[in-house]
Length: 430
Image (tube, rainbow, N blue to C red):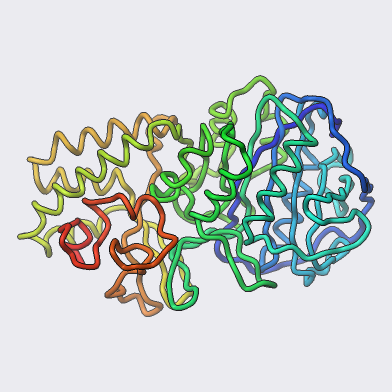
């Protein structure tokens, strides 16, 4: 990649939540090195890829980096910069333990068994191009320093961020549960969504990203999108789980990329090359506030109507599309927002006007026709399939914990409260 195109795509890529390593690839490496900072000419786009693979996703990360190298694009118009952290247990290229920074370069031989990108040194990150060092990718300072480094050295008209890795539900930490990304096994930590928002706000200097993407599971949930609504213009993420292979970077950065595209067009093209079974959401975040207010108002009205017919409502909601993760003591369940709204309207015709307002706003937020792929947290189930009797304190108003997301803090009609005074929908149903 040449030094002009700075596509700083800060995409939060969360690869699927389960992965069994197979035959390892990348047996040899021809990586170049650059120790000192170099400020490139201004490009059309810079794409930043934040890859926390210090877990069971290392092999998938190396595959995706190889896909980026295989993509054919004008390197004077597009820059792709990757911060990759591995666990060092993959029998593949270099098999290094630690964190490396790369400026992606095109590999004319396409997908193969080696990397050819430029390994970078960065004083901001404390990284050298010649020696290995372990960074905690769950630490917001790592993300902040990465974004600041890229924006300084790879200037562009447009920036995109891809957050790559695992995307979880409300994950256990210190006897509590919180929504998390950037799972880092070496430090035994992860990045809660409010911390991710802090990291972005502190590094973008008030200039929204043109594109914020999550190559992960469980990204396009209303709680996540509402938390990040002021950090980017357009958002792309999967409502449910996705294959460990994640996005096709060779197609997206190659034939699917136009340098004069907006963040919206990049998202649409990504959706077009996605798996037909995907529940990818391409969203305009400027309308998230109105969607939140409308949904919360509908939920409060739904709660009042459901109070006397709890069993009927609960049974009916079982038929609404939902997405679950598996394998933990507590496994989060996300229910499709448009499905929930239509269920409520069918049960209680008096909710028709409120339900239609939510659907109208979903159509404005979700820019792809008939792809209103946004979910909302609907509790957790235990490993034996029995629903959990309590919600995480991070999802309960008045619980007294710090670090709750903005959706939980502001919701009056949907989120449960410690006193149940709000009579919210989840208070009534659970």
